[in-house]
Image 1 (cartoon, helix red, strand yellow):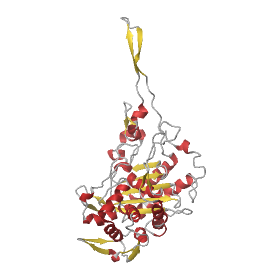
Image 2 (cartoon, helix red, strand yellow; image 1 turned 120 degrees about the vertical axis):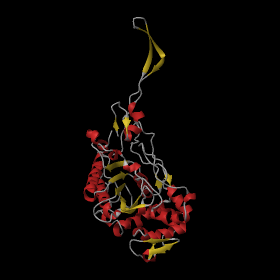
Image 3 (cartoon, one colour; image 1 turned 60 degrees about the vertical axis):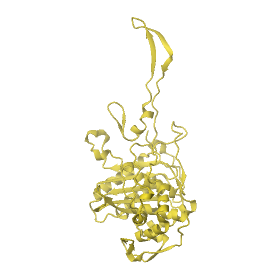
Image 4 (tube, one colour; image 1 turned 135 degrees about the vertical axis):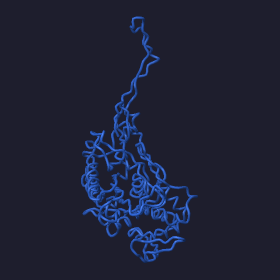
Length: 416
């Protein structure tokens, strides 16, 4: 955000916390004689001024630079309409980086286009596609509707579900629950949806925070789209498990994945730090239980780790680190209803280390125009992995999750 010519915050933290940054004008009532000389100062009518507070952001300048560089590379390589990325600490909810393309140069604000003002991390909504699948599987396991050793016949790529014919990108036969996620089988997920029913699918989506704001201290955050359960149909039973008929913001999605990385605890993200030594110590992340610790651990250390080692996210492997992740490729929604043929939103969310997740990265790329089919594992995964790798090394996070003096320069690299 910025401040306008009148000093009023416009956009971003400057607008969201304008009442804190601005302070309060003071005033006092005086009595004067006919010559204008002060003869009385009324103590009962004084309102002392209050200086504005400083705001310390959670953003890390170095991590932010990593993200900015990778987004520039995405724009050059894939020529998309837009893209965005977020780096999140799943334990605290701190947003370490958040960036968008297109963007603008604050020193040349007169050249900024309307599109470059949009904070896509909180104000773009899109169907999450396969990045949504782990939430349903985790809730199904917690409700004992699914079991880790379940197997599903994926019908070799074609499955007649009521009046619709579902397809997988590759023809699969019988897959176990892990491989349904690793290979991202839509047919396997549709059969999971039939077993869970719309009621449990809706409960899972609600539990992980979809359909409501995350609560970050930024203006303009959207709620995404989660229609009331009574509007769901038998068509929804197959669509929702594939990440369709629901829309999310990038921030909602990474926060939901942070719940799995944080052993089932859904946190409120924050871009304003809440250290005990600053005026915002009252701002705390809110934790809500989504699924059990063992369920969340199994998803991260099992299927989502194998997505990277042998599944659709192999391009996100980082030497020396065990990475987990999930790819997503969704068709773009048409303003007139339905989908736009040949237009895709590619996304990838990943984190590390597997045994003690310390960082999460999400990259979302909207409508790439180069490079053929815009799969999330192809377009978004390499950039997300590069951001994750650089951030892990910079923050001195060991492969086992231990931090080596990670706070050594964080104060210097935070934004005031």
